[in-house]
Image 1: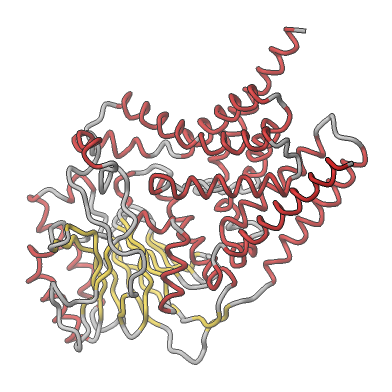
Image 2: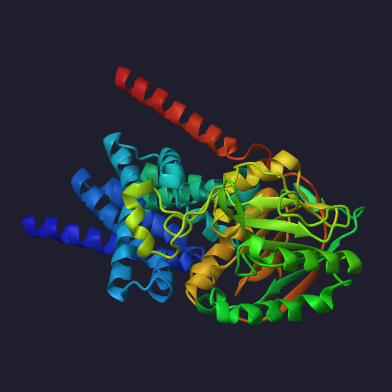
Length: 508
């Protein structure tokens, strides 16, 4: 009997490790989206088929495997630019994975504590724990299962319920998979699960036929050029390389003046505090005015309120360049241990361990879009594109025309991190039904349409300018208007029905 129990535990551990670890292949650059269902089914099986203690331990193993393989790319910046020994970087990845594994662990605890076996209730619980992962300690909502479905037949769920709706869909479907293939399930339960799964899949696929947004043929499309300077991170902040950086961007943007309506530079394109390069920016502004081409460029902006990761608009003849008055966006969501050290002085010693030795300041949550070439651009600088609520609320507040994210993924070299980041950006376009523009230092630089499809992109690690004539769209997705309220309303109804059902069963 003891051998049987040990064998079952070993099987559970193997399933947890494998189903968690393979989850990374559901995301870019691999894009085997169907693996997300297998990975999630492994989690549901663990959470529902074992006694509580074993379920919790194996769920933790699932989470560590899922996140350790999925975000292993964070160690690249630690080794190459933080001077951290390789073994220490891998330990740091495991610590991060162990922390992130606490959220699926909470999911399993709740499922076990309340004996949840309904897939819809489980999906609601998982949606709640994923929300916590996004907000606790400023959050890290990377590798949400829904992102993997952007190129699946179920992508139409995103404009209605966002990436959270797609994650919800994966959990419901995976719950039915487990019910169907679980040996302890009764024939009637298996039949019910099969019918429910069929209806769910058909319903999910049908959503792609919903059209919330269409191209506005009455409005002239905008010709936009994106500059990818391909500046190596280790060279970017080297004072000896400063002039070469200037020459690189000069080679890229000079032929575009007068031909493009708008030229966009990547995040902190010129490696200096804005006050130090104000004369250069003034020259860029004047060149734009002379040729009728406007620009958006990422800078580091020092003010009385601190140092900001910023973006400014140049080239508008009615708005001369000024440090104090130029249209500006200041990054709101900063990278923990990258752009600031959380918890103040308690962890101040970590500045010498991680990437940046200074704390950046935080911009407002809601900011006006940058106005360039008579169009409104909802901004998201690098990391903050992963926060769907922030992007949705900013886009809604000022009815922007385009989404624009500028980034520098050179920190992570040739790892899978930049591709996962790119996939997340594409999801924002699909959710909000707006074209998205992405300008980066080393890639992936691209234009994305309002359905999240890539229109044009530049190969990684190439010094190129990418030009595309991007139309304006009209209309609004359900998610653009209501955000997460839709999925929270569904979850609330499901929980209410579950509570009522449990109360009635107790009375019997």
